Length: 301
Image (cartoon, rainbow, N blue to C red; front, side, top):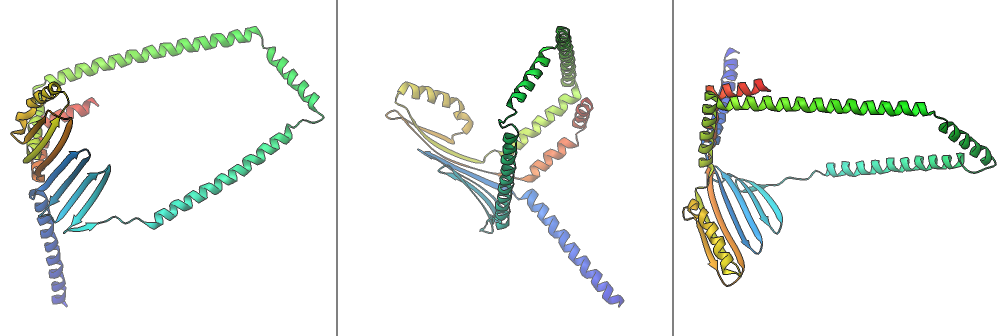
């Protein structure tokens, strides 16, 4: 019996250890195996494009394509597409809900019609019309008997409320201006603090590290550009010449001085490794100056 118990514990330990190893392997793969992306786009009278993200030798892939004003998304696992099935029960519930609302609306309409009919019957002209008109005239006379003194009291009350509200508005504006001044003083002092300056400098440096890592490794853009006016085309090429050095020869522009045309083909590739983001987050989060800066901002709130 004791040996059987030890065997069960051993099997459970092996299973737990295997699961732990698999978890560690999965974490390692997510952190160090890069996600590769590729963006392909073209414009020849119509815009078309496709974005593809793959991971672990295309074991998992996400494809988003755009053509003719429509967006198509596909997720593949080992090359097999995963499709989202629509639930019929949801459609049935929606239809039942609409039917229920329609029935309630019909009941409401019936009740409303009944109330209108009763109202019409109650106020329908009959032999008591003369008494009804006399009653209305008496009520009108009573309303006209409101004294001038009462109207004057109502006027002054309204004027007092207006003045009171205006004073409240001025006080509120003053408090708002004081709050803005205090905020300006706080942030001026905040930006002049050496520890905060070092923290912001660190965040900027790490942001540059992430951008450098995310930026495409390969870029190829070919453009055919033409206008009816050669002078206009020359001005456009002069402006594009300013950004041309940033592409390091990956941008190719072919001018056409005979017709108005714009054709474009682009192919952009790169990869992203999650470990880089984890390392940046680690560096920033455990920095003393950054913690001090966050604590100062929280205290301000």
